[in-house]
Amino acid sequence: MRPYEEEEVVEEEEEEEEEEEEEEEEEEEEEEEEERNFESQLCFRERHFLSELKLTSPYRQAGPMPRHVAFIMDGNRRYARKRHVERQEGHTQGFDKLAETLRWCLNLGIHEVTVYAFSIENFKRSKEGKGRENLEKHGVCIRVLGDLTLLPEDLQRLISRAVVSTRAHNKCFLNVCFAYTSRHEIANAVREMAWGAEQGLIKSSDVSEALLSQCLYTSSSPNPDLLIRTSGEVRLSDFMLWQTSHSCIVFQSILWPEYSFWNLCEAVLQYQLNYRSIQKARELHREAEEAQQLESDRSCVAELLQQGGNGKPMDARARHAALLSYTASREERVDRFLSALQQKRDTFFEHMSNPTAVA
View 1 (cartoon, helix red, strand yellow):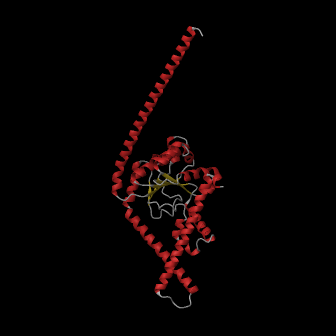
View 2 (cartoon, one colour; view 1 turned 90 degrees about the horizontal axis):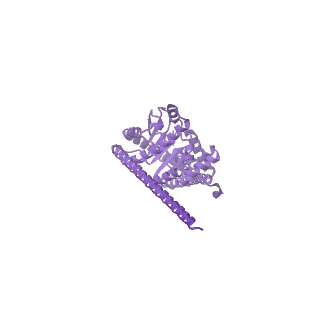
View 3 (spheres, one colour; view 1 turned 180 degrees about the vertical axis):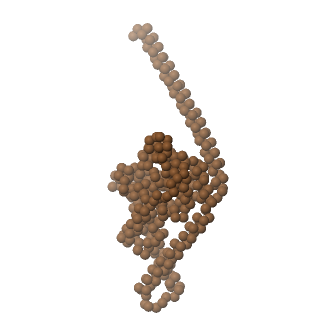
């Protein structure tokens, strides 16, 4: 190679190195700018979070807070028509509002939320990395309540993965009612008890109102303290009819995507104002259930003693001992049945989330 050619090669290499250095400097500047923007956003979020905490403080101190709130998230389509956008955009805005509302609930100390009228598209969105990170960050356990066998298999798998992947989370609970009506839920609970009797796990005499409650899709959750429906409609639309018999029910005219923190606080205040009457009604119902169960147990014991007795009346102590023995055996049967029922439901989700592994 000639000397002038060597000089040209050296100059080209130097120019390339300079260009690379300039590119690296530009990349570093961009990264620094992104970090500054992120820190700025983070500071804003932290300030916003602290502001929300301050706003929630008076409500948390005003009276008992609901532990479990149910929402009928109505008004997504009307919101889309109002804004002259596609219907799916209304559902998207509704999903974003749910995420925001969950944060408000956490700030208020509400750790369980049940929702109705939920688009399946939102399960598809939850597959995104950001969605999974948020679920991990906040420890959200997702439960899906309904007859999923009515859905196509691909949707069953999609939903089951969301349930199984968040099962270990316990900071807060999001129950999603999908392929759900309350009447179907109650009918299914009756079928589950019939299945238990066929399997020899329970007796027909074990069937009670309390057992039916434990066979509902919501058996893992306390009944809602507060039910909120948006959009101005004043009906329950076959949603949690059994579970909300002693709940505070609030109907609000706001469309769901426009729901605000103050709308939630208004509903919570209604619950606090009615707290004593709600608790009294629940206590009376609980006492009535216990009395009915005791009477049922006594009737069963009397029948058993009559069948196996020698005609001589038993003293009060012996009858009481027989009652205690029967009650213990009934509770053991019921526990065994409920464990088998839960195992059956868990197996369904595990199989649908990963059919090859279970098979």
